[in-house]
Structure formats: C-alpha cells, structure tokens
Image (cartoon, rainbow, N blue to C red; front, side, top):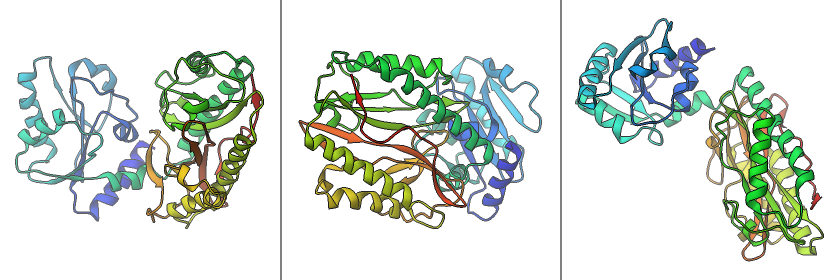
Length: 367
C-alpha cells in the first residue's frame, strides 16, 4: 500500500514542474510512510524526490521507530541545535534536493523546518504542493475506507452510550467529558480529531462553541458535534437534540436542516462538483427563509485529518470522484436563541453518495 502511494506520487511528479516534495511531521508524512510523528521542538523531515530514495531527517531518539526500514536513507541528529544545520546539509546533498523545485505544505510546514531547509539548500525553490497531495489523499483506497467506517462506528456507539445519561441540569462540560470517556471506551485512539462541541440553547447559535458551564434547560436545542480516530483515520458527526419540549420554531428549523442534509447527501455523485452539493443543501435553507443563518460551507473532506480536501462550498468546481470522503453538515444558527446542525460522513462510490453514518437525523428528545 505504501509503495503504491509512492509510485502514484512519482507519476504525478513526472508530469509536474516539481522535482519532489518535502514533508514534516503530520498526516501526509504518515500517509506515505505509515509512521506517526508529532510536531515538537525537534524537526522531522521526509524528502521524496523523483528517482531518489526517500530521505528522513530525524532526532536520534526516534531511531527505534524507523529500525529495519529498507530503501530509505536516514540522517539522525542529536540534542544540540547548533549541529542540526550540518545534518540538514548532508541530507539535502544525499537526496539531490539542492537547486531543485520542491513542493511543501503551506498549512503544515513550520518556520523551524523551512529555515533549516533554506539554509541547507539556498538555491532550492519551494512551491505549494497542496493540490498534488490532495489529488492523492482525497481518493481513499479500500483499506482507508474500512478504517473510516470503523471510526464512524466508534463515534456512533459512544453517543448511543451517552444519550441515556443526559439529563436536565447537566452542564455542557459534564456532557462533553462523558462523551470523551465513551469515545475511548468504545475504541477511539487517544488523539481525537477535535474536542467535542456540546452547545445548548443560545450557545448552539455559535457553530464552534466550546462546552461551557451552562446547564441544560427544558426547551433547549442541544448540538453535539463529535468524532473518533481509528488508526489514523477520523470521523466527524453532528446531531441536534431536543431537551424536553421545544417550541414550534425550534422544531421547524430542525426539520429544515434535516431536509437540507438529505438534499446535500443526494446531490453527491461521481462527476458532480463540490459546489453542486453546497448549492443543493443551501437551496433548501434559503427556500425556508433561513439562508442568512446558514453561515458556513456545507462540508469538508475527511480522512487522516478532520478538515482536508475537497471542500464542499460555493465556488469550488472540483469534480467529485469515487473514493472521495467528505461531510455534509448544513446548519441554521439563530443568534440569541439556538442552533441546529446535522452532519454525516459521505463516501462517493460507483452508485453515488453513500452515508457512512446511520444515526437517526430526526429530532430526538433527551433529558
């Protein structure tokens, strides 16, 4: 699997203006190596140049992680930062990176690594490789899809375990803590894709609200946005619940968002554009008179990262293809009142868009 990814990268490089790519610790490095390194004060670099062996630059303390790797040239450095430039220069020379045009990830590469690379290869040009990497990572293979399905199942099982524990008077923070505990108990890796969003009442009108000390009150809408991580692949789901009896407007906007979610999922297919999906979901909300309260894109790609390509938004005419995975998450947010979001994880296959998530989308009363 790893070898096939490297071969696909070589194919893209052979028809591009780039001679290779340079990656630091993060999802793309893990995609090409199967190894996870976290961002820390010690730099981690992988150089992948067309026709050359992969080259690693690593702190010596990570030697055990790469022990036994074949077909890779590894340069270790010690704890003294004054020695790092020399090691970087040796690696750049061995990898044939000097004087080439190399791709990097602007959202991932830090100034620390960039400075060391620039000093080691002063005549090397660095360019944005985001689209090239997205072309590889956005089309999931069967193994990746299986891992994502498991991440979805873990997240759904965790929420099912939490729902009977929800009660009026419980704080958002208490509910969020219980959800995290259940995610771990049901098999999520420790590195969650994000801290769960638990927002009730007026807090729900903030799409990225953090759990607060606010206590659940009868009549609230309760937004829960959560996900699991399974072997490096993540899920991202949202459901909105009724705390006790809710008023007519709350029930109405929940129904509208359900319809928008359905329309967005239905619009996905191989050959459709990301913009098509966004427009399908947004049209439902606008027709119902709540367009100004749908304040974000309809979705985003999903895989090793919670937010990656493709982005499901107006103006993005990227074509959806088999193997792509993304979210459909329309919402309505009424300032000072409440909010609703319903989010599913979707896979494009030969038949269209298949939802990986199956939790009910209808309004469910809790508390």
